[in-house]
Amino acid sequence: MTTVLYAVGDIAPDRDDPRECFALAAAIINEGDIGFCQLECNLTERGARMPQARHTHRGLPVSAPAIRGAGFDVVSFAGNHCMDWGYEGFKDTCDNLRGAGIAVVGVGDNIAEARTPVIREVNGLKVAFLAYSSILPAAYWADEKRAGCAPLRGHTHYEQIETDQPGTPPRIHTWCVKEDLEAFVADIRKVREQADVVIVSIHWGIHFIPATLAAYQREAAYAAIDAGADLILGHHAHILKGIEYYRGKAIFYSLGNFAMDLRMTPEHAASKGFKEIQVLSPEWVPNFDSLYNFPPDSRMTIIVRAELTGDGVAKLAIRPAMINDNAQAEPLNATDPRFTKVADYLKWCCESQSLAIDMTAAGDYLELSQGTATAA
Image 1 (cartoon, rainbow, N blue to C red):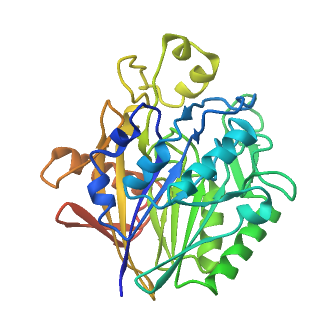
Image 2: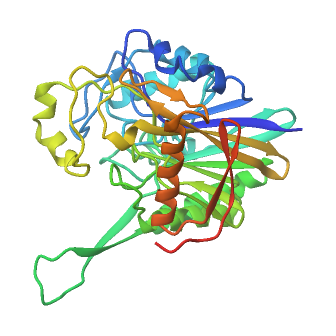
Image 3: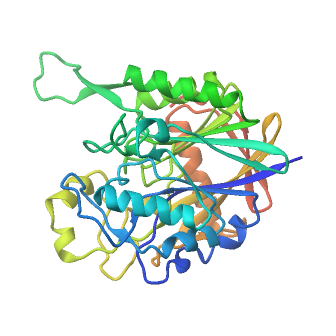
């Protein structure tokens, strides 16, 4: 028996009728047996904004049934926005999602809850989800007595390359925090014994800078697959990144945005916080008339379609999509020139990082398989 999973990246509804966010793609997501996404905002009308929250908004509680109506029934909330509105906002979000029939993964009132998998049994197949975040404002990760998300933190070291040339660009090294990586691996090994398919979601990576991956991402992804994961779903970068096969298992380093409402005001555009991230994408120009204010590359996105069996992921494909000014992801037909634009961008992301991937046209999808590595 086959179970079909549809997965997308980041969502953050911020409008009176959040059903509009998914209007162009809901029919596709609802074709699947399981729908997965990453939630990037609190769904609450309560709470005080945490001082360490740089960019945030509160989505209406009615967003939860809209997300479920769009076909999503497993949602990761493990990310750098989970505690933006304090414990009240965090708790309301989890309660609202669960009240709408959505399983929430990667968060909890303590670290044990945050590391607890969601296991969905569909068509006789047990599919397990675990979720973690490497992008972590202070105190957003759970511990024994504190609510938050499951952490997969990283260390960063800057190495001066030309020691006789002060101020020259450094080489950047990153690696996972040992205790987090050990817990991450232990979680995967444990759930591997309980499920037929194990899917790991990770909020990680370098935002807005095209293609570039951080070393700790490969360390974590390879460790997850070595421990028994069948598929890695990455997000946070707000742009697409490359796809890699390791030991026959796919790693999506970033699925990009999917339904991210982001209004821009002149005050926000002039703020120090926005200016600091705008430099990462020089082509990023605010549009005060658009509900979607991200760099041009962030318009491109994908929908992942995975056919799951008792042997893992039997077939994997992606549907290219483009995000419009109303912050809606529009699935593209193969005859649309934008379909090729998204495909070519993904291929470039892979080639620039020496990721071996083949994409084969199959109707309005691109089927994925292990390819031959191309030198960067």
